[in-house]
Length: 159
Image 1 (tube, rainbow, N blue to C red):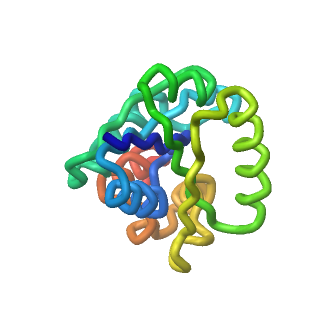
Image 2 (image 1 turned 90 degrees about the vertical axis):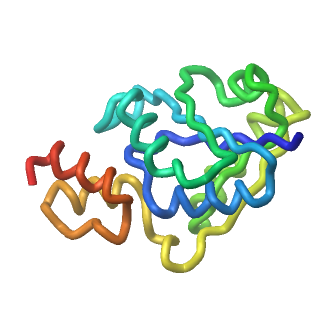
């Protein structure tokens, strides 16, 4: 069975993330969305909230599950017996960062392969931080996130 891990902070999960996850679910037998605790990033939502939002957003994908983790990515991949990590790429800046992370991960465990999926044009600009910014100023985010995520953001920002 070919199992892939799609890691991220997902604060919150966006339609761009869901696109990458859905496309990975067509390439692999099982996809695990790994929601990283990432306290250094000072997330808006707790790990538990982000896991719940990701579960709701990916519920339509039969071979996708969502779990939280608080460890090095390669250690988590080893723990769940996963040999593939899937990352989405939006722009050159993503590539530079992901290239460095892939090299570091390869140094830690060279049996874990990283697979990159390019974002389609409609999601190339989309990030969780952009969604949070728009939501914080009461802007329209309905085309950027699922209804459940939009509701959570509206509640957080009292919109």
